[in-house]
Length: 529
Image 1 (cartoon, rainbow, N blue to C red):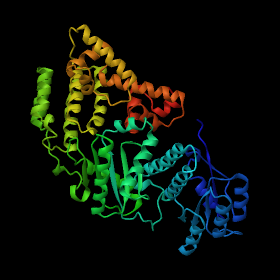
Image 2 (image 1 turned 180 degrees about the vertical axis):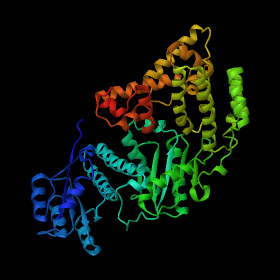
Image 3 (image 1 turned 90 degrees about the vertical axis):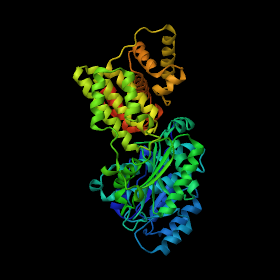
């Protein structure tokens, strides 16, 4: 179905204000047509009568027809038009009159990108209540805020243009960021038919409903679809109450563990990037186990060198290096499980960052051994699986971490499968066919070996011998091939494509795509293959 475009009319007697708003967004990307702006109230009425815009954003102080009269006439004659007013004054009595006349809300000059995004998102949600294709409109309304706020989070404070900020008098001064991370998003992805924008909209709506705050500033971080960010001025006790409500709601939606990590109060809206970095630091202090967690920066203090225990000491590193030269795979895996302690990391309350650092040291040792052998193909395989490890760690599942380490170890030791029984070959072919059809699902060595009732180590060795590809790399290849197919056949956004093929992290998808194809997803779409 062809997407419907909605018309936006901006009216202001100041040329630079009109042009500034015109250039703030890529309008068609959000199904919006930016009409030629109006300069006074009479021109607004002429354009409205002729072209019927869906959204009107007008200055409150207009020549010929003042803001109150203009809003009243538009709402009386064209009640379906959503109207916002722009005020350059502190005269809120006048603003109140325009609101009573039918305006939905007001924007205070100078209008910023974030102010505009909030207004457009709200306007599209209002329109959706009257339209048949409600689902498509609310997805667009959700996407506008997600994209623009995510771009603001991505930028370092020193390089954000001033026009991107809210006014200095904004209510957001002194706010905290609550990071809500859904560690395994696949279950929810399936519930929302792998429609990223509809999932995002639905989760945000749920959070507003359960907190009772319909005007809560919440957005889905587009570079990591399993992260939702809330900006709030609430006190710590109220934030904790909100977090508990969110976790209770998600426990009914998904089996995934969810973390709520809260930054310290920021001093200004420009500090979103720093607040996000701090909330990630807080998240890294959570226990590495499959259960929900709430962490506050004021309590956890983020991650410091003194607060992180080194579980992979230099002595253990030396032992592992020696074993890689002389010991069997089983002995090495037993060493990682029991001596290093990865098998008990959840029971012994290891922090997320401690597991991450331990695995990183192991991977570095693996890479050193393979580099000494001079095998470029093995090094490439190991590098790809090293990148996979960060996503596996997010799932807070020690067995999946050990499963991937075991696959990496097979590459390091270049272990062969030996004689293979015919029935296991059939199982491998069935598993490969299952992956080909269900590439977007949560797939791992542990889950597939369990599905086909085969010991994971043996299954991995046989799979590689039969297909010529390591299991996890086979899954990656199928996902990237499907992503390329979708790119060739549609104009769907890159983040949506990543989501459709099983990745909840666009940044990771982009890295994997470039590793497999040699070019970025955008370069591929632009025909640079």
